[in-house]
Each structure stands twice: as structure tokens, then as C-alpha cells.
Image 1 (cartoon, helix red, strand yellow):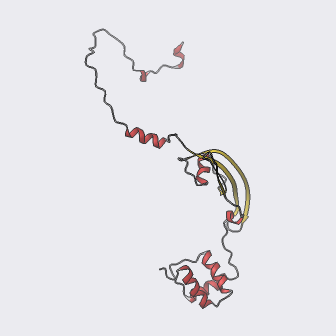
Image 2 (cartoon, helix red, strand yellow):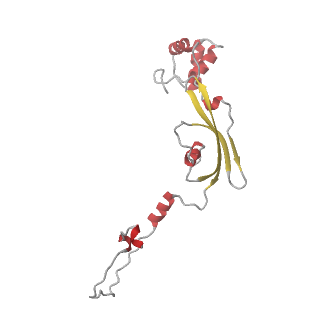
Image 3 (cartoon, helix red, strand yellow):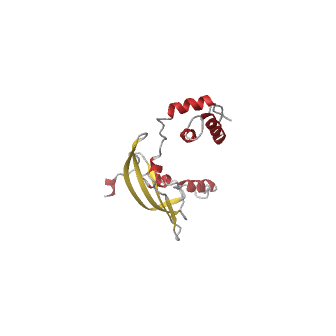
Amino acid sequence: MANQFTSEWNDEIIQRMLELAKIHKLPKVTKMINKEFGINKTYSSVRTKYLRVKDSFQPSVDPIKETGYKETIKYHEDGTVTKNTLIKIANSVDMTPTFLLQAHGFKPSEWKMIDCDNSVWNQHNKEDGTVTLYSSKIRVKPKENEIDILDLENIIKKLPTIHIPKNKSIKPSNLPYLNIPLYDMHWGIADYE
């Protein structure tokens, strides 16, 4: 169990302390938050924190939760999934299919994006400043009968090595000949005339 010095004050504990302080006296508030959060704050630390934050406390707000936007997931008969959600990203991020799949919680190795619809707007709050929010709606389907590069690499590694013996029955003749291996042709494009 954490003690009064090692346990941190977080927004949830502070918010609850302020709510309880409206109804109860601080010694009772101390016991209640210690029991509720499994912490070991002293009356002195609760009183000090209460006096410090009672007039100025503003809980941090997640801009995505603040909008009240509902995330929706729809499963279709053909096996595709449509997911509509808010994502918070930096302006410098490329909106690639891989990035969007990961932002929506899909593994790019298992899902393929069929359709994508994004809209963007800015929201301002005191803590984060102006935040760019994207409403993103994607339609994905599971990858079937498609080989990922890593899967292909694993398949190739499992293949047995085959050694082809040299054919000793063919003896080289004493006639001069030119042997040019196909992999070693260095002719330029102008030599084909």
C-alpha cells in the first residue's frame, strides 16, 4: 500500500475530495478517500491540498471526451467492419492507410482498408491549447488469402535447401568458346541496335 509521500494526487482523487468536502468535514473526507482509493493520506496532507486547490482546481479534460462524440462500430454481412471515431493527431502526420488502421485499433497485418472518410476541425482548451481533431470513418475487411511480407519470409525460411550436384559426364572440349553468364551482362541501352 502506498503511503502519503509516495502516492500521487491525481485529478480523480482531487475531484472526489472536493465533492466530499462540500458534504463532510475534512477528517471524515480523509478517511473516505483513503478507503475509496486505497491510499494512505494524512489529515494534514488532505487539508493542505484542499486549501491549495479548493478555488482554482480545474480537472484536465480530454478534448475527445469533451465533445460528446459517440464512437460507432458496425459489422456488415459481407465481413466488413465500419468504425466511426474521433482521433487526435498532429498536423505533420501522414494520413496513410496503415496509420488510420492503427489509430482505429486495427492491426494492419490482419485488416485491409476499403473506404475512408475524414473531416477535420480545431478545438481549444486551456491545458492543450488548440487541438486538431479528426472525425474518421473507415471501412475495413479482414485480409484473406493474402501473404504479408513477414509471412512470406517465414515460409521461405522453412523451405529445405536443395543441393544440385555437378554433372561430371560433360567434359569440356579443347575448342575455344566464350562463356558469358546471364547475370553478368553489362550492355548499355545503345548496344541493342
